[in-house]
Image (cartoon, one colour):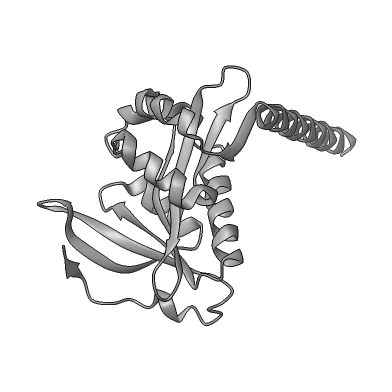
Length: 198
């Protein structure tokens, strides 16, 4: 009927307007955020920011962050709110080993800004850099109890390579996860291996 068709058109228009509004909001939000390389001047802000309240986030000593910046600066990023300059997220990474691999030592997002794709953006950056540097894969460790982080990495294409028993503490195991770069088209580096003890 004409009423039914009119109702459908009305709902479709409303949906399109909501999607356009959401897209505009995301673009505006994106404009307020800067993803840049980490600087030494960021370290104290990182150590004191709200991110450190997360029980799964480790607050490292000052020299730990500085070591990463000095040696692997192009693998270290912060996500900064453009107006307030506060740290919304950060990533520590490096490139090492034989075969060469990119490694995510830490990636963390302020709980207030999760679910908006920022962790994915930072992971994309380190994956691109690892590919440029001829790494065979990118790997990371995640607490087996951190189901949200584990789900994110699985969604991004990471596979469990092995479990590392007691990695964090007695009874706190880690999943060693890997994602092959284009240098390993068969993804052989991701094949499951036996669990190990620390």
